[in-house]
Length: 168
Image 1: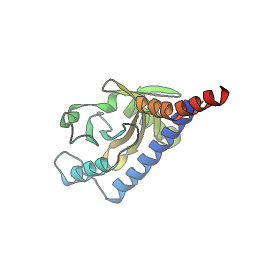
Image 2: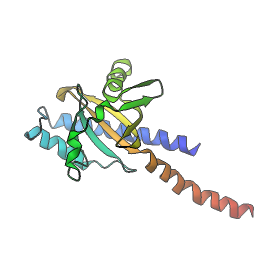
Image 3: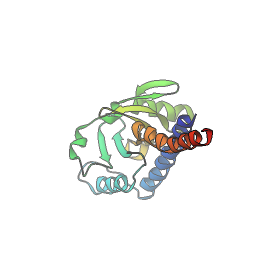
Image 4: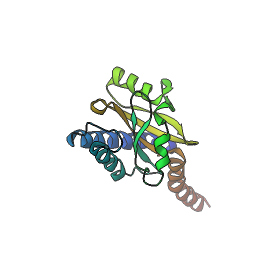
């Protein structure tokens, strides 16, 4: 179905985004990401520069605790730093585990990002998580499931309407 196509497209977009952003972080040799450090400021700027489609966001979480380190929406909502999105449950096609654990398993099994659905702040998101071992963190790209469904509706409704007109 078209909804499945959009889910696959979203996963591909997220994977591309995490790969590009991980490369940029590595190229800038960011190592210390404790809040207030130069490394943290540079990492936060990288997160802010990326705007995934469909009400998406980018986060970097502590690989051990799941605590938020940086987030693309941090300027709008500084209270996000009190959150632990890495502990949110990621539902993948063959696993259900906290995001940081699911990412570890994906890295060990397939050397690739963990991809699945996660609930965060009461909303369902498609999430892709990739390890950043140099900074002991996990990079996560989210796209809102509601935003994905809205995109499907925006694309399918006109086609259906044209079909009804042609059939009439």
